[in-house]
Length: 338
Ligand code: GLN
Image (cartoon, rainbow, N blue to C red; front, side, top):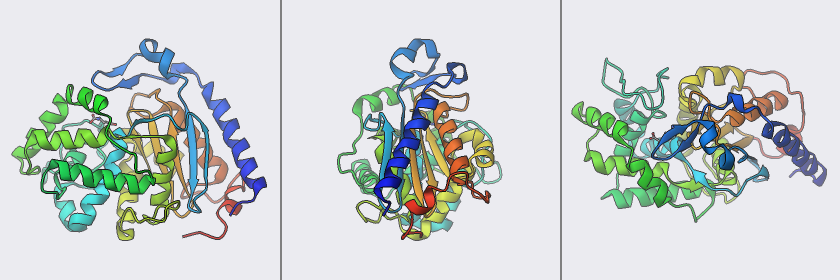
């Protein structure tokens, strides 16, 4: 357990990080996501959105540190893909899931309608087409049961029984889903989706519309960092043998078509969502949840990326880094390094 002194220093560092990035220049922000309407120019929504910002860290010891709008809810959006991929692996095993969705970075945008020509599979489960395929692999009797199961799993990851679908977000998403619908029909024509397109699409968009806070997000990330066991509640959210698969795909494909740049600069598995959230995992140590709605051209949170770059740099978290500028994380995790 960290001492009071370490906790205090950690909170100070976070407050510093927050203040510096809050002032980040808006010229880097390309848009904000508003469900149902796509990205807007900053001027249109900047007033209410641009100051929203939270950084949250959860350790595999179950300690949680946060700063900013840590209790402000936002939709998981694409981050939900991580957890549903894990469920598909648990239900069907690696080989069967691999028949439906690959593990190759696509280099294309998250909503690309391009598939692997050799086998008609979506490139990976972190782009929309891949997530439509993993959603199709849910095994409930009907979509209502599938949704309950997905919610149950998300709640275990977060240790929060209150997680639920935001019906307003869902209605807006459903009202502008033609591209995902077109992708689904194409996949169905290839035999890569077996359920009715509308049912599967609605289940996918409902999982995207589940609301969390950055605190929830950090604990979800820490659960992945902790071998699938929530470090706060000690509940198992994902069978430990599949954690490696999920993290590998996050590492190579989690940040859309800037996944390579992210792996190069930050060097830890992560997943972003167009609501402006990033979930990042430091195996054996830490989960990071950042929320800030200003997006870059790829649909990734601008402040989120900067904050993660700096945390990774200062704590030496890049998987190929050999040094840390700041030794704080060592004592924070003493006693539990899985
Ligand atoms: N609901 C969005 C979609 O399916 C999620 C996309 C995202 O976060 N990248 O288009």
